[in-house]
Figure: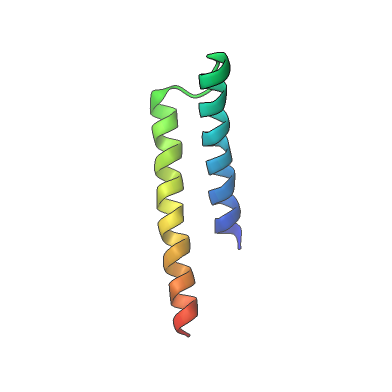
Length: 58
């Protein structure tokens, strides 16, 4: 399912950015970029969960 792949990719980007910012003070996203990535993760997560629930009801 391509949505799960996009979700995981965005989540990995977010985690790597936070880890680099914490460990080496060299995050590659600014605050707005980080917020947009995290918002995208949240939206895709909700979409994937709703699709899985709809498939389970069939």
